[in-house]
Amino acid sequence: MNHFEYENRTRIIFGKERHQIVGELIKPFADKVLFHYGGESIKKSGLYHEVVKSLAAAGVEAVELGGVKPNPRLSLVYEGIRLCREQGIRFILAVGGGSVIDSAKAIALGVPYDGDVWDYYLTKKQPEQVLDLAAILTLPATGSESSDSSVITNEEGQLKVGYSSYRIRPLFSIMNPELFYTLPENQVANGICDMMSHIMERYFTNTTHTDLTDGLCESTLKVIMKNAEILKRDSRNYDAWAEIAFAGTIAHNGLLGLGRDQDWACHKMEHELSAIYDVAHGAGLAVMTPSWMRYVYKTNTNMFVQFAVNVMGVEASFREPECIVREGIDRLERFFVSLGLPVTLTELGIDEINLERMAKKATWCKEGEETPIGGFQKLFWKDIVEIYRLAM
Image (cartoon, rainbow, N blue to C red; front, side, top):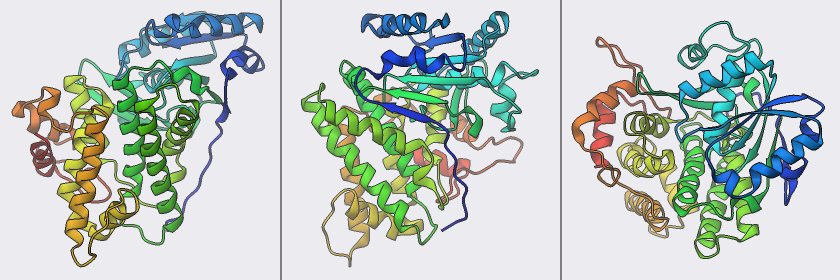
């Protein structure tokens, strides 16, 4: 097990109707907030009006900025920074899923900074200060409600880049499973895949003596799959949503990766799909993950045998480890299909024309120099092209 330090300041407020106290929770920190959200869904559900009512009752003024899209755009981040500076806003409330929360984090980074907020995403430097923020989660998926991460898309360069800092963890996040009842099936499926990927990016490692986090990863994956099956039959099952929501937070709050080298190649390869083709992140991960597994498993076959047996329930002769591995990957792929997710690039409408371009972007390959991705197995652009081809 590797050395580690762990800190997570986010307070989780979990349960029915808890979003109705958001005003009194914010009041000790601010009298004025940027109310950041996506489209019309929170207005149709009534959540928007409940939030406005709670803020007003607590004496908190709200300046609105909607319009966040999946794969949140840098242009809207710039608009949020401008609004906060002009209005003297020092606190952001994000009401939505991971895209809204990631956008809010980028705004929080940019307001006190003299330069271009995009600098943080390119250089990975740490901020001296950020605005405080909080979230009301409407879609369990990314874990952004308590993570130290934000992913933003720069439309001009077709770049989708992640950034991490402990300073951008929300002060608190409200999670009410009842808010998830009316989510479209495709969004639920994408969210399930995203949180599973967050776990698998940490789980597949060459670090040894990580029995505790191995077990935590395996248990969380099984809980997600079990309750995803329940939600397919009953989309208003509170208990299943509670398990899924809690699992999504645990998947990406840093706990499951403690003491172990991590991978993150699938996320980086998927970011190129989203940057150029604007595909849903979870759908892209459903395509990339099985293909990555088939390409790299021989680096540490035992790790994949463990996954196949402990997570996917494969029962076979341990004298044939590769058969166990292949069956485990096939079962994962079939699970994705059962949720209605794509498992090939062709299903996403992607052909071979940009494979080399995406692979070189993923490794920042320029003038013969590149930075390989992945902790489990180092992948250069030519490796990534082969994985994309496996995914066709």
